[in-house]
Length: 556
Image 1: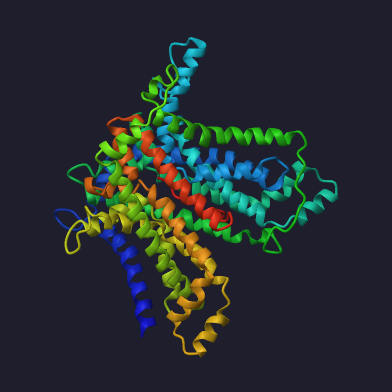
Image 2 (image 1 turned 90 degrees about the vertical axis):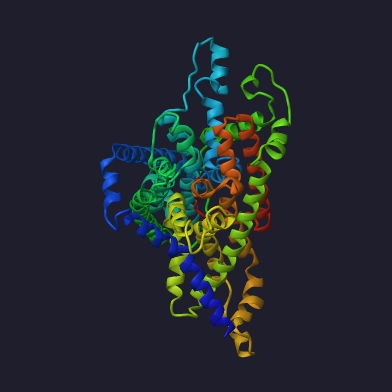
C-alpha cells in the first residue's frame, strides 16, 4: 500500500509540475476578453517589432552557434586527441566558463568594452592617444561574442565526450598505413564526430535564442531586440499574458523539434566505437604546434573566463571602477553596500539559497523514484513518467515562467509573489539533470539485490530506501548539484516571477545594473561566483572530478 501511495504521489507531482503550466500556456494563448479566438496570434503577426525580433533572434542564434563551434570543437580535439600540454587545465577552464551566468559575462564585457568607459577602451586611448575607444560591446557583434562566451563550452563538452568514447583502433590503423594527422582527422575522426558536431550546433542555437540576460543588458541599450526581450516587454503593466503565451508556444515548438533532432543525432553516435569506451590510444604528436594549440586555447579562455572574472573582482574592490586604471586602490565598501545597505542584497542571497536547496532536494527525491520505476519497470506508466521528467529540457525558462504565471497568479492557488513559484520554476526546469544522474546511478545497481530483499519480505519502497539509495549516493549528490548550480543563477524565469520580497541574486544584480551601480553589480556577481564555485569544487571533489563530464546546460 505504501508503495502504491508513493508511485501515485510522484505521478501526480510530475503532472502538476509539467502539464499544468503547459496547459495554462495553451489556454492563455487563445484567451481574449471576448472569448476564445486566434486574436493573440493575429496580433503578433501584425506587429513589425516582433517580426524584427524574430529575425534578430535567428541571426543572433546562428552566428553565436557557428562561432561557438569554431572555438569549442578544435579545443575539444586538442585536449582529447593530442599531446597539447595543460589539457586538464584547459578543460577545467572551459567548464568554468560553462557554469558562469551569461548576465555576469555581459556585465564584465560592459566594464571591459563599453564605448565610453570600458577598461580596454580606456587602456587603448591611454596607450595610443586616440580620442575614442577601439571596441563597442553595444552592437550585434558584441551581443554575439558575449553570448558565445557562455555557449561555446557546449560544443567542447559534446565533441570532447564523443572523442573520448571513440575507439582509437581505426585511426591507429590508418596511421600504420601511412595516413598523416590531417588526413586521419579529416577522413576518420571528423566523420565519426559529425553527429556530435551537428548536435552541438543545434544545442548552442537553442541556448542562444532563449538567453535573456545578455540581450537585455547589451541588446536593449543598442536597440537590438530579440524574442526574449520582446516577451519580457509584454509583462509591463498591464501584462499581456495572452500575447506572451502566443509568442511562447511557437518558441517552445521550435525548441522541442530541434532538441529532438539533437538527441537523435547523439543517439546514433554509437557506431563510433566497438567497445563502448575509448580504450587506450596514443596521443597525436603535434610537435612545436602543441604550444600553438595551447596558446590559442589560452586566448579563448582569456576572453571568455580570465578577463571577465578579473574585471568583475577588480570592479568589486575598486572605490570607483572608472578610475581603476589611473588610481588603483582597494576597498570592501561595495560588499558592505550589497550585504547591509542595499535592500535586496542579503535577502536575495537567502532567497536564492532557500529556493535552490529546496528545488534540488525535492528534485532528487522525484528523480530517483522515477528512475527506479523506469529502470525496474514497476508500473505500467513508467515510460510516461520518464517522458515527463525529461520534458522540461525542451521548455525555455522564460516560456515556462509564462505558463507558471498563468497557472498560479489567480485562484484557486495563488503562488505568484511567493518563493514557492520560483522554487517550482527551478525544480521543474532542472529536474531532467537530476533524473539523468539518478537514472544512470540506478542502472549501475544489480536488481538481484532488491529481489533478494523482496523475497525476505521487504517492500519495494524499503528496498529502494535501504539498498538502492545507499549504493547510489554519488549519483544522488551529482543530481542535487546539477539542479542547485543552474537554479542559484537562473534569470530567464526569475525575471518574470519575482517580486520585491522574493528577489533572488540574479534579479538583484539586474536591479543594480538598472540603477546603475556597477560596483554593486560587480560585488554581488562576485558573491554569486564564489557560491557557485564552492558548490562546484565540493561536488567535483566528492564525485572524483566527474560532476560536469556529460551534462549540457542552460543559459540565463
